[in-house]
Amino acid sequence: MTEIVKHEPTTIYIKPSTGIAALNLRDLWVYRELVIFMIWRDIKVRYKQTLLGATWAVIQPVLTMVAFYFIFNKIGRVPVDADIPYPIFSYAALLPWGLFVTALNQASRSLTANHNMITKIYFPRLILPLASVLAGLVDFAIASVILVGLMMYYRYVPAWEILWTLPLFLFLAIITALGVALWLSAINVKYRDVNYVLPFLTQFWMFITPVAYSSAKAVSEQWQLLYSLNPMAGVVNGFRWALLGVGDGPNTALWISVGISILVLVSGLFYFRGMEKTFADTI
Image (cartoon, rainbow, N blue to C red; front, side, top):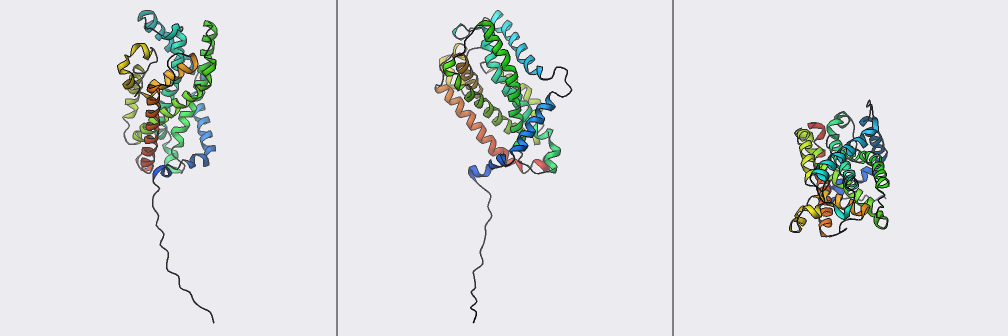
């Protein structure tokens, strides 16, 4: 005789992920080939049908350095750290700053520039600003050749003993750019005012970042901690310290800048993910 056993029905509750799991960062690894493809595509599109091609990655920082040299060094007599030749002093800051600005400009417009992809197929939308930021590393590498040439011309020896820390500050510049770009790219989907605000934002941001001057000499000690709330101040000062050996290195002001960069990135990730479900309908 067969015995019939009755089971109570099981109720399954489907709830949205919370915390860090809601970011679904694992998708970036699953779609890693798409990330690489998008980086390569951004690089090709950037210099497509240009006469000078990748040379533009060098022209802009070099001309900016020349302008800074005459305005801030020859006319303004802005003091620099440790008697470093001003072209080296300014160009060492223009490298991470140029990476930040290029990444910010491209990544902030990445969603609207790829609206056809967003409305037709599924993929992690985070790939678009991430690929735009990482593509800026190519311009950074090309422009770095000029700095090597300047050091050879002025016979300036880099700080070999701490040079290994340079990639850390390069990484800090990347996460800062990505964090700000996540906020702006998500906002730009709904409010296209970002396209008009961005040039003013980057120009103003450059003046409050120690690109053309030394923050140690231009900013009084009582304002240093407040000044360090600018995450790019920590990036530029850290970059100069790791490359040229000037400045105090990792101090309280630097760690404040690092904390702000991480905060901007994490908050940008959550805001981007929260707005992601509306991109296809709004864009």
